[in-house]
Length: 177
Image 1: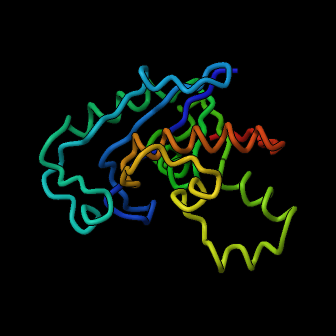
Image 2: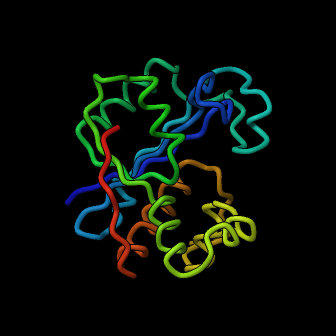
């Protein structure tokens, strides 16, 4: 089964008013992450506000928003996406509505189910939270000294975490975007 790890950065964590700042897709084929075929797109939008402190993108470089949205649609339509949490899925739903034909698996949800089967989930969430960086570190999956909240780095780590969780027996529920 061919999958596509997907991550995006936005101007706000609130999906109702978030605007796209950057996105990345990374193909996963036959349990191999195809980084050489990944796509990373940055949106040129002038100043992006406070969110620049999180993802480091100032909005001065990149493609215009309409072009980025078109590229995003072409990349994800008809695909099975691997995401970490549902913020990206919510953005896709809001942006493309029913026109988008895609499914997804949520790695964060799979991780939570796996951890809940081993210990008290409330304790795990209080102690560790749901942070891609920390979860990847638990599994020894951090490739180098990268800064997370870069959509390409996050998409690669989401793909790595997906494959790792599958290797320890986690099954994922396929859902429609």
